[in-house]
Image (cartoon, rainbow, N blue to C red; front, top):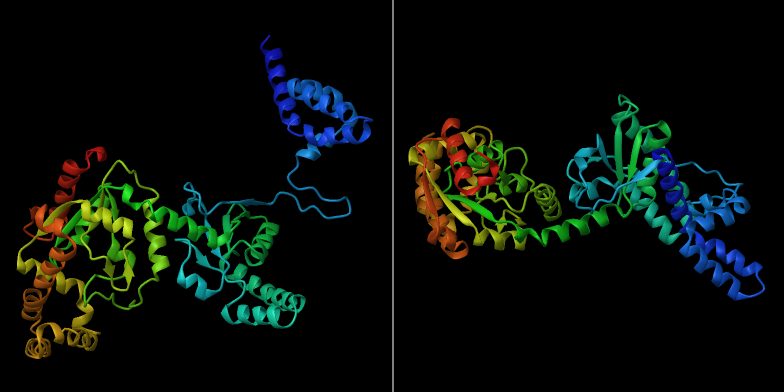
Length: 442
């Protein structure tokens, strides 16, 4: 009996699938019948009894229903390359770049630098100059001539891409390829990689669709409850965020994503360029997609601008409503922390430090700036750091908090830590999670 039931279920499933092609098949009956009524009655009859559709057409049409279901069909004299490349939607909430061994951005290097899927590598099938040459010929001369040149250039670059990135890869390597909008650039790379035998995926709509998804996601960043870790410069707020994340908390470190420490001295050594606004947006959206909206998101107290990039408005408004922990440590510990984090200013980039403090003349005056320069010239780094904290950073922090982050002044709960040791910050992180993030299980 169970065997018969399985057969019946299978037959019904096939019948229902084939019935989806009913209108197509009945159009044949319409053409062959002497009256329209015959075709109409066939449609109604088969809609009620799909198994009759199978009996009626199965012996006449042979494999035709299967062909009718095929998404793509080719005339017999055309080459069908088969299903070798899968598609992936970059603006889908379930998209995970980490599911691929390689995510390849086939656009030009300048496009990649402006923004890209986090974790993607740059594999340009045309560089910026080549893309410009091909585009000029396409618009001003002839599209066919442009495609010939483009094909020759792409062929040369594909060889380099494969040699530099994939020669040591196994056949099972999973690769995603995208370009600006899912056109010829990504298709050319995807095609070659798939012919080699790799597990290749392609992104219809490309970066353009991805960017639209990022913007849509950022519009909903106020769905989260934010817990702001506030504190004066040198309190090691970033270290507390690291300890929170290591303990399992949901954390967005905006200064890390912006490649900036949020002050006039905030440029990172050896990497002064901040990301574009688009890339900053991408980093935030990529991280936030994995978060549970029923748990808090820990962030550092920031202004709406971090260097030259802006915190998404919905996130900023959520941060202004969030709970606040005001971190405080002794001045001596702040000085040690600052010096440890800015050693490049004491060694290889002292000239750059002098340029930075010159910017502060309008705020503190020439006399104060000259005094700082004298301390720097004399190598009295502890005195310099303490003085610039007391005379500039602490007052600037208080003014900014009162102006744009009033909740830090009104609702903050203090957290006093005696030093910046790993053990001290790990204990503090677990206590914060125990109180404010009970779902974490800490």
